[in-house]
Image 1: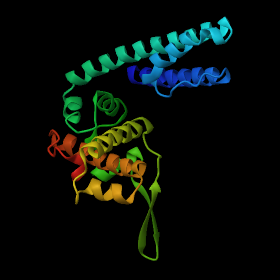
Image 2 (image 1 turned 30 degrees about the horizontal axis):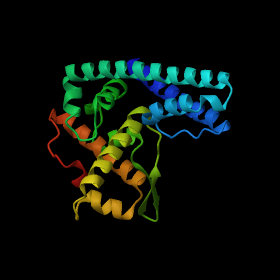
Image 3 (image 1 turned 90 degrees about the vertical axis):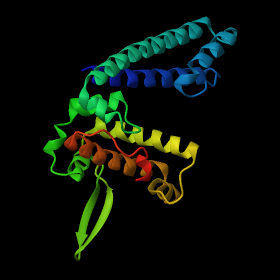
Image 4 (image 1 turned 135 degrees about the vertical axis):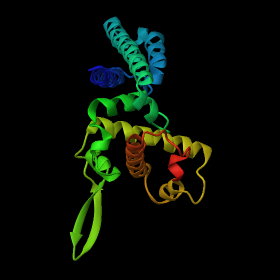
Length: 222
């Protein structure tokens, strides 16, 4: 329930920010994108309040207060999730993997069956919808797009975690000859993130079935 509620509040906050920016744009105020720019939006409203009706400024402040309230609620729920994850042996073990934090770990605990119930790592990745569809013709297997038919919450969080690994590796400089370096040379980042999320899911299965922490400090180079 905590995870679902946090997810709902995050969506509501995104919708509120987008609505505020759209309304301000109607009155000639182009607000910067991103939640981190909320302070800048508030300053923009206050500095140019005299250029439009006072009711517009008051309404914008209501939006800003709502966004701040949602941010506070989200932060409290994330603190709760972090505390619960720290108390859980399984979640603590999962969090030793790069790109996997307490929210993803708790989501796996909440929404996935025991990972040992899957016969192999590919079965878990397929259950998440991270495995390409296979088409056989003339005795030849052709891999298509990922099915996206699995557990959406975990899949989305793993892809977000994979994107964070990619951003970190890109800033630090990927090592030539590694899997990640080769993939980024040939594929768009989003495609690479899905492939990396697949690898993360398979590694999670191995960690849980063997009751081991993550061993390789360079997941993206495996």
